[in-house]
Amino acid sequence: MFFLYNLIVIIASFLVKVVALFSPKVKLFVDGRKNVFQILGQKIQPSDKTIWFHAASLGEYEQGLPVMEKIKEKFPNYKIVLTFFSPSGYEVRKNNTIADVTVYLPLDTKFNAQRFLKLVHPEMVFFIKYEYWPNYLNELKKANVKTYLISGIFRENQAFFKWYGGFYRNALKTFEFFFVQNESSKKLIQSIGFNNVKVSGDTRFDRVVAILERDNSLDFIENFTKSSSPEISGALGVTKCTTIVIGSSWPKDEELLTQFINQSADDVKFIIAPHNIKQEQISNLKSQITRKSVLFSEKEGKNLGDYQVFIIDTIGILTKIYSYADIAYVGGGFGNPGVHNILEPATFGVPIVIGPNYSHFAEATSLVKLEGCVSINNPKDLHEVFTELIYKEDVRHEKGHICETFVQMNKGATDVILKHIS
Image (cartoon, rainbow, N blue to C red):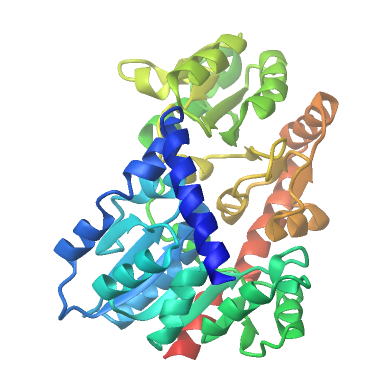
């Protein structure tokens, strides 16, 4: 089976290089791996002690960040090596400050796994949420390296739980311990003979709780949310408008949202931080909006209070922007695999609106059931939900409180993990 698997990986690596000729994203995937071994050889000495974290993409990085921070505190003399599989993770977080070395994970061939582990020689390894690479796991097992899965999720449709999944089940034997997010994942992994498992919860809750301890102020956002219009501010001169923050939106989200924005009252303001900030998409979004709008890239010298829509054509500040929200819309729920991170606005006690595709995300499913988060399917739904949240302050505060409490009640996964491995 290993022979067939390795053959497939080799064929796939060739095909990816062909596709890279036509796809900028795939080109990043290919080019980013060209100098990985050289970088590792330069930054890691044979005498270094190392701990390796692997994240598939950006979401898994955010999930693993609380554990990385605690591990760095606990083992200050160790170098942290962080690998990504996807460009959407690596390109955004390649300059992070938590890891000593950040690289793409070379493709899962036996040769790559052996060479990677020889250069990194980790004493502990953490795989975040998922991604089970058989060659890497097999070589880690041979080297007797303690390997952990953190914030793991298992589902019935995964190969481990099928009659043909023996090859992948065998790879799981590498793990010293499985820290999973929920009871259903624990039962599934136990059903195939693994009892070295514990429900620790989701470490992302610890990350978003920590956000509250930092400075989330942004002067230009504060200026935008206020209005100097005499019709709105009245005798006081300046007032904060009801502010709706739209985070990680896709075109399907924006089709619905722009209809509402264009019909909205003057005392409601919108901040839009699209998932994709390519110039063409930003221009298309702005062209759909009839309200007075301004881009982040053109904000200098402008009185932002005069505008009703603020489009954020940059990255890295959305989390702080959520702290100014009265209502949050989180995008992705009209696409596949579904809605983006709702925990960031939730930690600020903000009611959340999302699209219909959220069933793969436990936190979204839970918050919809608790009614802190509302799922909509069409423009009519959106109009009704936004109108209620804008004009019924008690409803808005109640849903926001549900979101904030949900986050606080689910923190602590990082401590569970650290206590076990100490």
